[in-house]
Length: 112
Length: 112
DNA sequence: TGACATACTGTGTGATATATAGTATATATA
DNA sequence: TATATATACTATATATCACACAGTATGTCA
Figure 1 (cartoon, helix red, strand yellow):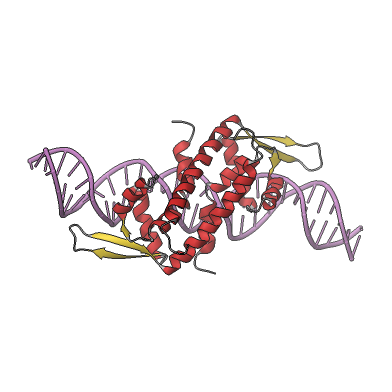
Figure 2 (cartoon, protein in one colour; figure 1 turned 90 degrees about the vertical axis):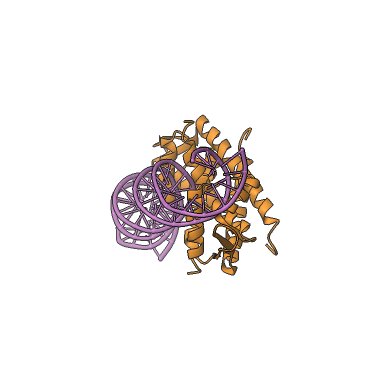
């Protein structure tokens, strides 16, 4: 086990996963579909992380859902709400500020 | 109170604060000094967030400390270790991947 | 028929940001 | 010289979330 690595990766995921989901849900998607989609764009989420998160975001009214019972197995489609878009804007702004801070601090680092 | 805002800001801080501290501690600094420094570069940390974090990072051996008892009030100076530099590299790499994913997903968003 | 992909639910745990509270010294100012 | 403010740090308690672990059940293909 290299140092304490999984732990810090989980920590780095916090916040980010929400941002990613709020961006992805510009297009309606159901959970499993999203897991695959996220892999396609070069990241990954655990099922047991994503599903609870979707429920949380819906509880916050940042995303909404509807069941599709008509095409094979039932699927729960989620989509971002207007409120969700406001939050998305906000968290993206926070990210940008953070990135600027990192860039600034990184200049002081020898052979980054 | 707009929506649930403080909560999400705290969430966005997770992971990021470590990155920021590991970058800042390229130059030795004590806690209080760091709080001021972080404000100067355009962010902010709570005392009750930073101090426990410094102890945690030290416990992980990502930073080391020494007391300066010689100039007025005792101050605990922290500095990044070699192991800390490895972690820093790693978390910065994660951040970059995340930023790329965000950029990619953002292209699908109308009037971001 | 049986393996694997699909699609989701539920419980428990650990890490950490922060709220809240407190200690104590140094320095400025009235 | 009293007192407010800045400095510098410690301690406890709480809530949230990522993920480990466990499970249900349907669809599909060899």
